[in-house]
Amino acid sequence: MTQIDDLPVRDELRGQSPYGAPQLNVPVLLNTNENPYPLPDALVDRIAERVADAARELNRYPDRDAVELRTRLAAYLSETGGVTLATGNVWAANGSNEIIQQLLQAFGGPGRSAIGFDPSYSMHALIARGTGTAWISGPRRDDYSVDVEAAVAAIAEHRPNVVFLCSPNNPTGTALDGSVVEAVYDAAQAARPSLVIVDEAYVEFSHHASLLTLLDGRPNLVVTRTMSKAFGAAGLRLGYLAADPAVVDAVQLVRLPYHLSAVTQATAIACLEHTETLLGYVAELKAQRDRLVAELRGMGCEVTESDANFVQFGRFEDTHAVWQAVLDHGVLIRDNGVPGMLRVTAGTDAENTAFLDAMRAVLKEIA
Ligand SMILES: *Cc1c(COP(=O)(O)O)cnc(C)c1O
Image (cartoon, rainbow, N blue to C red; front, side, top):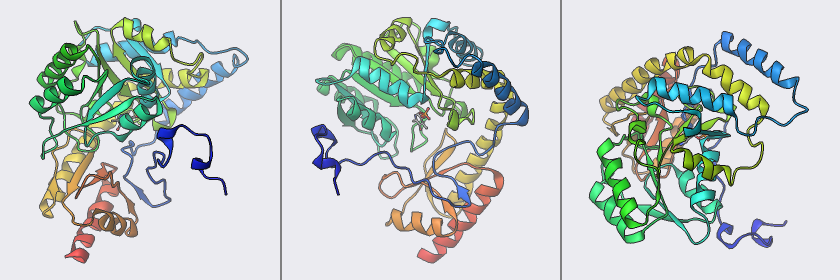
């Protein structure tokens, strides 16, 4: 059988494995930080209407610049983020992963490098690799917070072209103080200057305010967002960024023409007409997250403070064995490869009860 390595594939892809959160058929899925609530019927109906309208024009290419969608996203950010943003400050793509890919195509690439502070979102490094951008793994403290001095020193040493921050951070759940972003940004400008990307995929669940307010006066700062988590629309594939309009102009140099289908644009616009209903679940999920933190601590687990819709916990000698044992109880959680630690997504009340019961049983089994 032909293997990847038998093909004339790029050298840096040899021996690598693809992104692979297991998609298993188990009763309780708490492994990819999705929102557990299906979209409400009123929104499903509105999507059907808007998609039907779009379908009548599917013989034509979609709006290449997704102007109506970006205008609505800018309005949403301006209403919720303590900022005033216009259409030109916002760009949208098929998930924030595509946003990150476009940013790396424009600001990274062969001969260039990007740094992140690990453990963090593994896709930052994977997309860097896919775009030929060298990856530098920067440090984090033992409590998973970003050590500003160490981060600034790493940036001065490596002079990366792109700096990734993630707040709240996946998989640890830790959020960043604005002062950390300011210090990292200043260091990145002094070293090169370089583009600083703040991934805010989970910001709606945070105790901290959005870092969007830092955009003003920082043309090399980008904040990325997604509709996959708090909006409960992971299947839609819609991510976006906010930045200086020049950054939006730069990603337009590398994006594929008509990258965002008319169906995607219509669906996302319908979702943005229902932000209040969608984000109505956020308060419930935050309460469930806090319950997971409290009950896991009650079982004697070490739990990382979380600003997201998931919780990192441990500390286990054999994380894979614990992951498997929880799975044997019908609950799929995530082993992100952080030594000693596992991650569980906050689901519905019943799902979290099933997980917590499974954990109590597993802790007895391994005791
Ligand atoms: C889930 C997640 C995303 C979302 O990616 P999409 O492509 O928008 O689904 C982005 N960043 C982080 C840190 C995530 O955990």
